[in-house]
Amino acid sequence: MTPFFLLTVILLLICTCAYIRSLAPKLLDNNQTGYVNVLKCCRKRSERKSPYVAVCCIAMAFSILFVQ
Image (tube, rainbow, N blue to C red; front, top):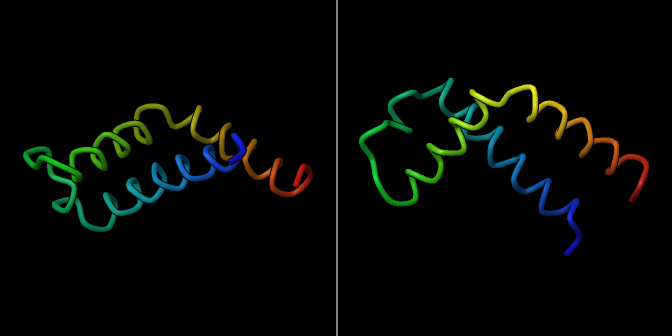
């Protein structure tokens, strides 16, 4: 397993949670626990750290296009 694969999985999870939040805000509510709480944390990362997430997405795209 390469670090690029792990970066891809984490970025897809973060971006998917942000997209789900924009479509159905009550699905990732603040009062839920368990696995949904992990998704909520990913959503918060995408909202608060969006410039860093964008840079990581560009790095991931570069690695997929030119490195692999």
